[in-house]
Image (cartoon, rainbow, N blue to C red):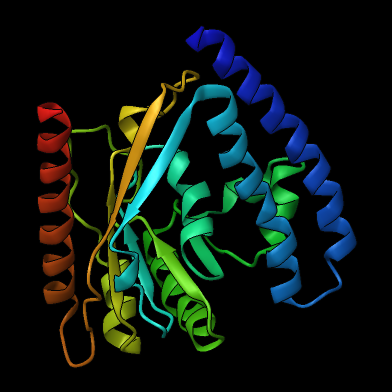
Length: 240
């Protein structure tokens, strides 16, 4: 049944991508707020469809920690799920992602219209400059910036050192960092077709102020908080 349910979800996701790609072309001339409002419904549909077909839902803890002011989201990266869910949990946002994603037919069209920070991962120096320059512009425009500080999807129970780009952006701009932990990889593993039933836990931490602090300090505090919450989530899930 898990295979059949996962197949049903994937088929619906593909069809939704085609539909929203066409809608994206129609709203392309409109301002960012309009484009975002329309195109982000793709993520909401996918989460609804995921719950319907695979019985996979989520629960948010710490939503009161989301500040009124926009900031930088440091999120644990375990699967594709969080790229959908963050759009439904936080205000309008842009993502730091590899530029190759914009080249994917249909999917890339809509993604490009949301003005992400598309970096050249083959050139670390250029990628950092793109992140700092475009990130500052997006923040100044009132948008949230989503960063996966480990740089790639990491399986549950594993960790990678946080890269410095997001913390440098925070230190230079003074915008707060909001850390996010979750256990989506337990239900939607990376590079896996299967989606398992259950409830994903998303925990949002208190904002980490960045004004007057070094990138190393910001990264250390964010990494310590995320790792501690990940350990708590895992321990609580095992005890249930």
